[in-house]
Image 1 (cartoon, rainbow, N blue to C red):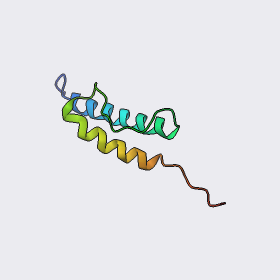
Image 2 (cartoon, helix red, strand yellow):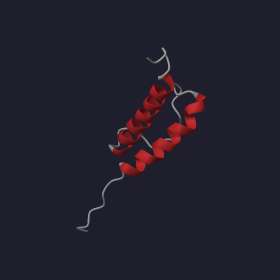
Image 3 (cartoon, rainbow, N blue to C red):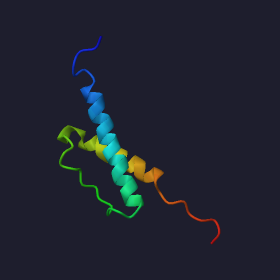
Image 4 (spheres, rainbow, N blue to C red):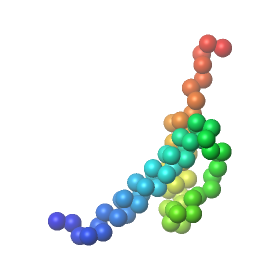
Length: 69
């Protein structure tokens, strides 16, 4: 049996990852401007993780260029 709070670090990492994905997707939809500002509710020690994941998701959500130009 796991201890209470044992999974909190993984939960925080998943929440930070989700926030980065959401930011990148909103940028892709042109609902938010592109920004590298780390949201204030992300702990300072997770800022680098947020920015790394944000770049990862931006690469995924890049518009597909049409080959019918």
